[in-house]
Image: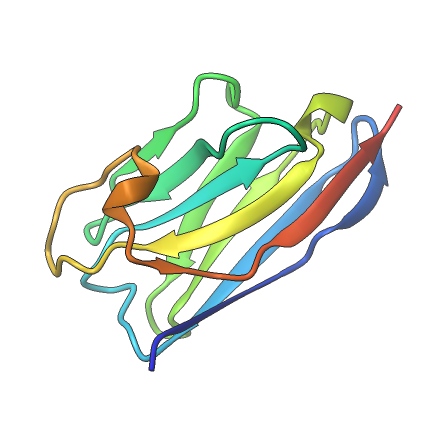
Amino acid sequence: QVQLVETGGGLVQTGASLTLSCAVSGHSVNGNAVAWFRQAPGKERAFVAGISYIGQTLYGDFVKGRFTINKDNAKNTAYLQMNSLKPEDTAVYYCAANNNIWGPLYRGATEYGYWGQGTQVTVSS
């Protein structure tokens, strides 16, 4: 059974930093792409960042150098380091894993077959 568990969300002030973690079990981050998405109330789920099995990364346009995605293959965990947080970053953040081993990195949510339950990030002004 594949499980993705996100942790690290919370309430922070504008300009603060947070690191989200996504612990994966039953599926390898070493051989599959992992991504972070976010969804704010009333908005569609948006691609935040992704990392391929070889460490290639992609980011959403709104990230603008503020976020960094990485992974620890030994711990089977992906991370999203978020700096200079803004109120508009407030959302539920989801971790997702692609189920095509050695596959490419996608921006589309439909390309990811495994999802976590999400973690709330709230940035106050």
